[in-house]
Structures are given as C-alpha cells and as structure tokens.
Image 1 (cartoon, rainbow, N blue to C red):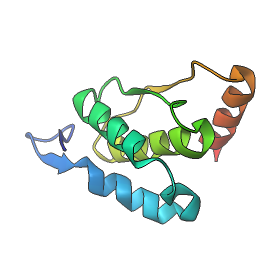
Image 2 (cartoon, rainbow, N blue to C red):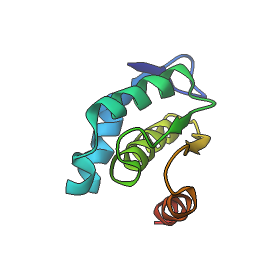
Image 3 (cartoon, rainbow, N blue to C red):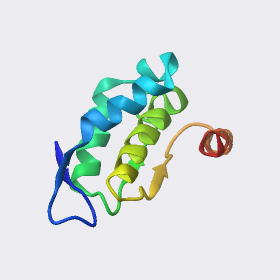
Length: 106
C-alpha cells in the first residue's frame, strides 16, 4: 500500500517495508504481534494519514495492538505524518492507559 509522502511532489512510499523495518529492529517481542491487525492499521494509516487513530484492543492490547500502532506511527512519521493516537474501549481502562503511557515514553 502506497502513501503519498508529505512535503513532496507526490512521491509515493510503500508503508509496509517501513513498518517491517521497525518490527525487525525492535526484536522478538515485536515480531509476534498479530499480522491481521497490523495489516488493518497499515491500511487505515494509508487511507487516513493525517488523522490516524487506531483501536488497539482487538486482540492483545499491550502485546499486539499497542506495538502494531507504534510500528505504524513510526513509519507514518518517516513519511512526514504524525499519528493522532490510540483508542481503548474495553478492559481495565485505567491500567491499560497507564501501561500505554509507559510504552510511549520508552
């Protein structure tokens, strides 16, 4: 899936290789995230790069959703965009929001 790189004359970038580069760079815990969820996040980011906001509690909030969002957000940043954030809609929202904040600060 190609994304128009911000600030260029229509240069398009494949988002998937950028995401996979970060996934490999971050190591084992990041490679085991849910691929279907990652694909959905990439598709959403390509469709809405200016307003990318992902629901991260579809499979495993902390071990998959959050990690997949971070990978996509970093790839978007490489293309000149800033992801807007994440959404949580189930589970222990207080605990999850604190854990998400910790991960964002790492």
